[in-house]
Image (cartoon, rainbow, N blue to C red; front, side, top):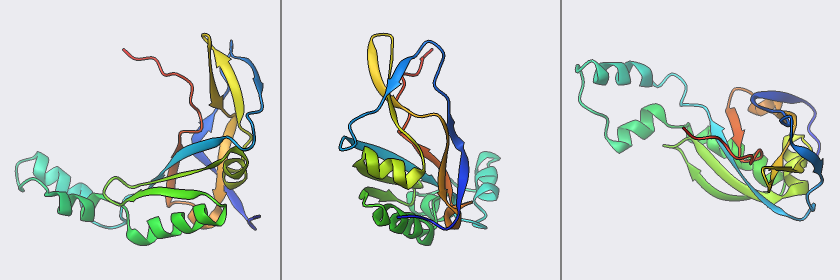
Length: 159
């Protein structure tokens, strides 16, 4: 599926680290899972409420209040779901409170959906999926999608 206009998702820009073995192409039919982070509900007053709680001027938020003030707008999640399904991705989870949509698809589907080329990279005796550059999304999702996680599977150092 081609989009008329796509935009870069700078929050999901990645580089292939120095010292990484030359990348190869993963099998196009391999299954990959991604997590799409969606913006907070616009104009919900969420930050003001959190500030009031932290200052002791308001009671803690219930789970329902949290979802309503700091979660994603259901219409935004529905728009991201429609995008994912239009590229043949399977929607695994939609969670407005956590602001995420988890989806899965083949390497080929993911590459097409997010305008990238995935590689199998190696470092420290292990192989993992990686990509270079910024992912792209349809312009209609600009400002709604904040990040796409899970396409760069390099190990992360822990303290």
